[in-house]
Image (tube, rainbow, N blue to C red):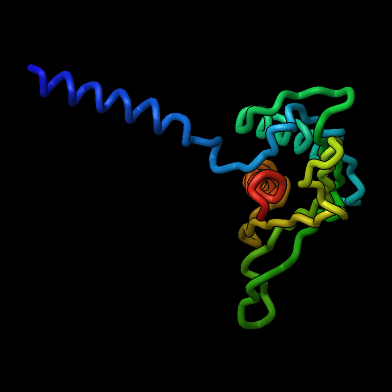
Length: 170
């Protein structure tokens, strides 16, 4: 009976001790940074859907809000993201014999800045960083029929890249 109590006490102790070691997905945020904001991204890419920049802005806000301890604050945030869609293009890839293209590639590129507004706290990107990703689709598919899914897949990866660059020092 005593061994069971000691064993259970040891398990409870280990749970409490290991709970202090956990961090949000291994992110590294200075403890002085408590708030963030994501300013509305601009759409400067000529062929991009008009909602791409706004959707990306909202998804980035959601990602930071749910995966970090930071709180969204619009006035005087401790850190903020700004950016723009700079390229949205379809590129033919994988030509077949006789000059036919088997696949097309949708590529999206963002230019993003991350600024820490707290003096003496490192982490800002000195210049805008470029983030791009792509997804391929068959040449017999119309872009308009696959565009929404491709954009979802591409922006999911772009969000991970931006998040890692800001909070994981990648």
